[in-house]
Amino acid sequence: MSEEEFEIDIDDLERRMEGAMTALKSEFASLRTGRASAGMLDPVTVDAYGAQMPLNQCATINVPEPRMITVNVWDKALVGAVDKAIRNSGLGLNPVVEGTVLRLPIPELNEERRKELSRVAAQYAESARVAVRNVRRDGMDQIKKAKSAGMSEDDQKIWHEEIQSLTDRYIKEIDKALDAKQEEIMQV
Image 1 (tube, one colour):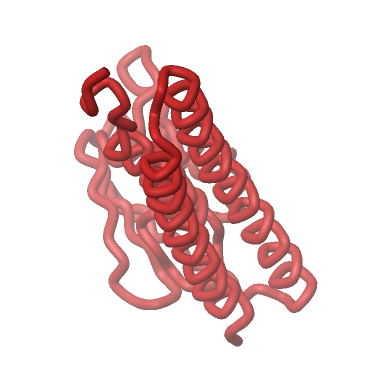
Image 2: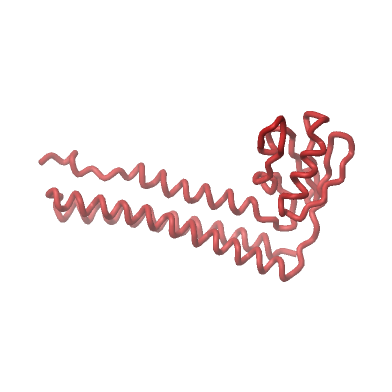
């Protein structure tokens, strides 16, 4: 049998692990830390023109100061819908409407809420670790199939080490991102 038949698709495994990392960063961005971030509004959808639209497709979102987000609505007719969508988003934000601009003051977080957000961030990170480990398991399954098809012990060991190294790298990246997010949450 030729070597090509035993090729493990390491690029696919890495792409899937990177996907878990991207999803984690997106979840972290949605966590409110007491500091303004345009990413906080990513989950907000607006009932516009008879359909649900992401907020960033009907308004410009800016962060002019650390505790303020401004939302400049493009269509004056949508200001009320945008205001309602932000209020009902569960983010705990109360927009102040000034024409087509909504100002969103970001309230201070109390200690209990900070600890709760820190736990949520840890849960998000654990979900990302599980996703990375599942991709690792798929890679190991590919090696097992190749072994039964005649892959040499040496090749198995090389692929095993490469997949484990990739997994370790992404787990370390997840841990680093979690530490940074928890530090950001706990800062007063």
